[in-house]
Image 1 (cartoon, rainbow, N blue to C red):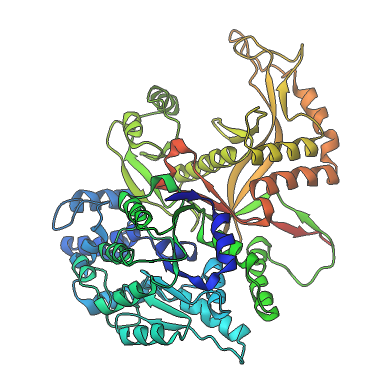
Image 2 (cartoon, helix red, strand yellow):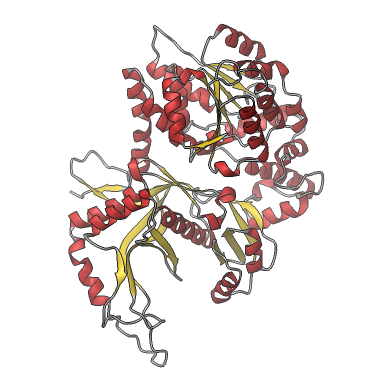
Length: 600
């Protein structure tokens, strides 16, 4: 088993695209805005809780900390529910709330109705209809890949070589067998069923007894192609058994077994055992580092040799969506140049957080506790609650009680003040870990300070060179004599920096960055209460006189925007390691900053 980067797979795929089958899990639908398994679980349990306690369900919100606490107290390992976080908690919630299959079918229809394919899914569908992907399997119920393929087929269909997507689910196993034997591609096999069909498999006992013909059809494919697994956790017993048995025949997966993961060194043990067993049987097995499904698809389509019509269609996918998201409303056409804003669209944020009740503690006491706990994550408290991303045991030492992991929505609307602070601080720390920078939190601001370390990685060295060019010199240093001293009696440090905050405009959250020059706090004489003029104020003011000219200011805005989101691609920023990104994830920022037309 080898650890490789995404580029290794992209190059291998480009020379033999039809020799790869695909297995797509829930992660491939994440950017389309579908509910997570935990969110579905909590919604189902909320229905049971409301019914048993005679409550009005529509008045309850599973994201409300008080409601979430009540659900945990009532269901976590109690009242016919398994422990939250166990492998079958999702299945158990379905069985408890909706044991009838037709009811589960209607429920899933309701939550999937109206969903649209993501950028990555649209590319995947286009690659299927263009002849680059023949066979895909999925554990998902949604029809987003089908929608994407239909859109591409309608836009680009080559009448001389039509490739309409065939779909086989639990009610159409004969179709799968026929298509695979006749090579009438492309084919999508839905291992757990389709929400439009009557048979769905989302209970543990149903998955164990999953249709053997459908599974055998997938196993037969393993003798002819390789397999790329994306967005799948390895959680389903039936699917993992299928993959394990598919590695047993001689010459299985001739183009290799490629498993994509955000943290390849932290995949579940069962996945690792699968890859190791495949390697022992002579299958080339790889763990591939991946940020997002969308990024992978964008890389693949750059390598594909498409027809002119297909290339035109694909080129029109991402830019159209980005411009719509990043542009303020227009009133008629304008021909003037545009003014660039220091704002990037916040496309996604962590969907869960540590939470615990906390009252009677002021900011100073909260900071003292965090320091004693050696806390390095993100933590805020407001309104009788504490919120955090980080180690749960350290967080418990701060708040004095065991925290719970609750689901949150930080991009659907303006969050309450505590979560707003958490969002901003988390963004600042994630950006700082991406750039040659350090994050610094004050009582009022979240700051990203540039820093000139000597042992930077090559991408961060490149970013540092670009910042130095934009600022025309050093971006950090110490003030000279006469500029005041810090609390240690030393010359004060300074750094080019940006204040970070989040605002909602036109229904969209924007990450705002405001460049400025940070100067270390001045040591003041506590015996004098009168305000003291900062001796560095004139130095800082003069430093910015020329920068306020349009050309220089535009260059500074540009270097910050393009360093945060390089290559004009949406960027996924994971929370720093101290924030436990494997549990809480990170942020996605759009690559194109907002802009405004100059007024007439």
